[in-house]
Length: 324
Image (cartoon, rainbow, N blue to C red; front, top):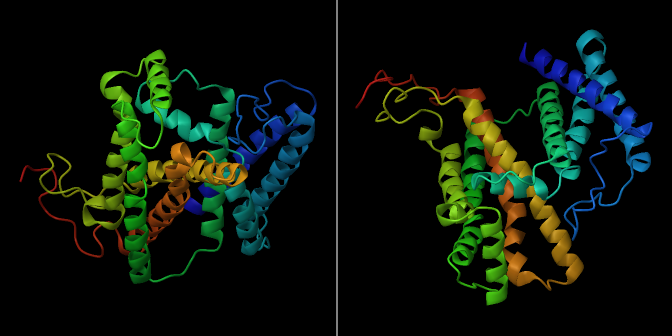
């Protein structure tokens, strides 16, 4: 049943986004790529035109709609075709079409600033939703048959990397927010703090990025710990209840995409400039291993939950819903 729901979702998404592609191809407004504001290597599509890119979007989405419809209503449709298309469309929509502004606006949102959110940014979330659907369709069409013990071992190592990787960036940003020019000159920090003031991010909100890094590191540990699958017994009302899988998987997946995209851009920028901006962007080189490790830890968490259940094959505690 879930597999069919995912396929219905991929069909609907592909049909709607494909129609948008035809609209942009025919000269309609609202083409979200090629935004000139995405400069200094932020996007792979800076300056691209609708006439150059929209045909690929329209044709690709039309092919996706046909594959999803065939999987739903044409029984001879081979599962490998669905999986193959999904493993091409999913990563493309998740990691190629979005750019650094996805992570940038997630970070600003933590400080209560939404002034940079516009259609080109929202379109990236639309692409991420489509990528998640196609990746889900691929996983369900050709599931990975790995024992839960192996997924547990993979998850522990990936979680450890994903928990440590954001800390250097958090430390540097905390220093900058405090006015300490760690790795940069004072003029850079002054300009950064002035930008925070202009966006109304003062006081505690100026520390949202380092706090988010610390909080994210702690929450990441839950992907490999029992408290990430079952709420601790001391929690009122929730204690002992199974943690909804989506509560962990959805935010972890979104952060995975945003951080991986930013990490790829950081590596492209650093290689292109010969590490000329290493002081300000050096810790950003850790975003790519952070994103990849977090994605692998999230995938392992999903498979362990699917194979063993939230309590790892054991019964849930009987004190659910009570103080303890």
